[in-house]
Image (cartoon, rainbow, N blue to C red):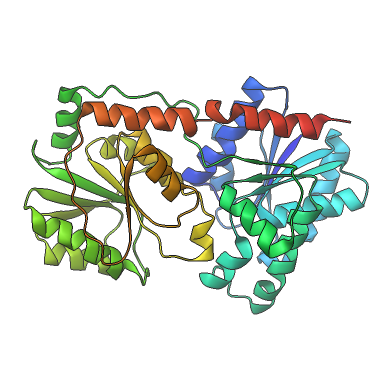
Length: 380
C-alpha cells in the first residue's frame, strides 16, 4: 500500500501526521505502507534527507515546478505501481488523490483512499493560498471528485464529513474520522509540583505567575484584534498574568508587548523543544476566525496543549474541538467581547489534561479507525 503526498514539504506537521503515521502503522498492522513523497525542487536534497531520516525507505521524488503541472506526476506514480506491484493508494489531500484516481481509471490502482486534511477549496479562496486564479476556480470540482470518487476517506473532523455532505452531496459511509494525533512516542509527563515550578522557572516565570501560551504566528491575521482585546482584559486584571507567544515577533506581538510591558513575551524554538516550553504554562490559546476552513479544521496544537497539561482557551466553531472543550471541561470557549476569569492549573488538572490527550489524540487511541481503513483497502 502506498501513502502518497504531493507538494507537502517536511515540517513538524509532516513528521507527526505523515512520517510517524507510516512508521506506526507498519509496526502495529499488516498494512506494509510505502511512503511516496513528491516534493518541490526547491531545497530538494535537503528536504529528501529530512524525510528519509525519519522514514529510511521512503521514495522521495521531485515535482515539476508549479502545482498546476501535477498531472505529470501521474506517469511517475504509475511507474512506481508497475515496479512495486502496489495497487492501493492512501493519498494526502486533493492533488495526490487526483493522481491516484487517474491511475485507477488506467487500471494500475485498485483502491484509493482520500486522506482529507480540510476544506481545501474554501481554504484556497478564503486565505489566498494559491495565486493562480484558474487553479482556484478548478479546485472545487477537483475536491468534489476526490471526495466522491475515492473508495474510502479519512476526515480530520466530523465537521469535515458534514462539509462533504452539504457541499458535494457525499452520502457514503466509507470513511473514518481521525484527528491530528500526537507523536507515537508520547508518554504522559510527570506533573509533580517541583517539575511544574522548574519548567516555569526555566522560562523565566515566577511561581505565582499565571502563564497563557499562544503557539503559532499571528502575522497577517486580521482578526487578531478580537483575541488581543480578550487577552488584554485578562492581563489588566492581574499583574501576575503572563502571555507567551511561541512565534517570531510580528506587528501584533510587538503591539501586545508595548501595551503590557513585562507581561507579554515571545520566543522562537524548534519543533522538538515546544513541548518542554508548554510545560511552563497554565493555558494554551487556540483562537481562529470563524471561516469555513476553521469550522472543519483539526489543528495539531490542540492535542499538543493538552499533552503538556494545558487547558485550552479556544474560539467557538473550531472543528470538533470547541465542543470537545465544553464536553470534557478542559478549557474555555470564548467569543468577541467575552470576559474570562482564569486560575492557575495545579498538578491534578495538568494530569487530567494529558490523560485526555492520551485517550483521544494518540495514534494508539485511533488504532481501531486505522484498522477499519486498512481492512477496507486490503479487502478483495
